[in-house]
Image 1 (tube, rainbow, N blue to C red):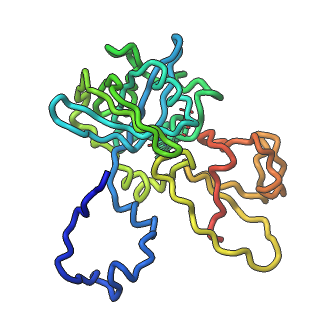
Image 2: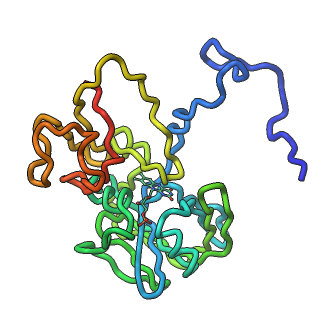
Length: 259
Ligand SMILES: Cc1cc2nc3c(=O)[nH]c(=O)nc-3n(C[C@H](O)[C@H](O)[C@H](O)COP(=O)(O)O)c2cc1C
């Protein structure tokens, strides 16, 4: 299929900086952080079991009938559940959602933990949970199409119910999550961008590491004695199955602090 260019060339225009668009590297991935997204939990079901995960890729595609799409990584258990049941719910999170809540649904897999333990939810028309904690509103959808896109599937769904639960709750955007709450995304997220790391210099020192989910700092001088990590243990030597004592994020969700 031949796709015509979307914008006809109407003469050279310069970017506000010195470079023209052609002169820039054109792959400054951080510029994608300027896009805005909603922070949501999608849930689905399979063989009488429920699961859900954080997504920031829900968007409305057409008004009539109202339809939405969501991009889900094939590694996620939630993907397996949506592919099986062909239904999903979307709970739209409020700005006040605690980081530990996002950590549980966005950095842990339902393969390892029961995400619904001590969480308020109700079962919707699709037979799938709608999360009630920290939720401004929700929608339920039936999948009409699934499109493979590299590592992810774009599930397109027809909305069969959508409700505002609390007008007073301000929905959280991904920008707010990143810039105000200091949150990050795991490698499975559709909008994950690899952090640029500075080359190591000089001798290896024992660095402090920060949990990118909740901000907990692992200090090697202190260790985590409550969880059998002795004081004086370098982060690299902490066991691989150790998790953040505050939010439960895995070791791969930590990054070295600046100093
Ligand atoms: C802010 C944020 C945004 C995310 N967005 C997406 C997304 O759009 N699609 C996706 O597949 N995963 C996304 N994730 C990652 C999943 O929530 C994560 O991989 C989760 O652990 C999957 O859980 P599951 O295996 O129980 O389904 C996001 C995570 C965070 C923290």
